[in-house]
Image (cartoon, rainbow, N blue to C red; front, top):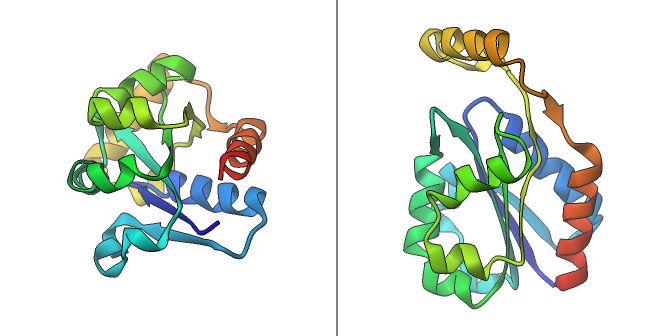
Length: 161
């Protein structure tokens, strides 16, 4: 099995989660790639694709969304696993992702999970930093990556590969 973990991130949380997924998969046949560097990759080289994104202000990473839309036919022929890192927890977080993924592709995915969130203020511009601080203060969301869910997610990727 050759797998690609491709992610879009704003503050680094989704990247951190992607690296944790790879570590839990414990295989050398896995490439982890920021969507900004995807241009030269060929999806034909992969049997399994794991795609992850953050949600900010109700939107997923625009580059990752474009990747999913443009590569939908190719992704339909692969094992596909989706994850999201956002403040909306569990099924609510999955529903946020579902709004932005092509319906057929979302249904094709073997698994879709919300794997936690973090507030990395230092990586946000002043406007986003201010908004995030206000949301965290007012809504008090559950913060942090869900380590057990990440391991379970990675194990399912390996089991279905």
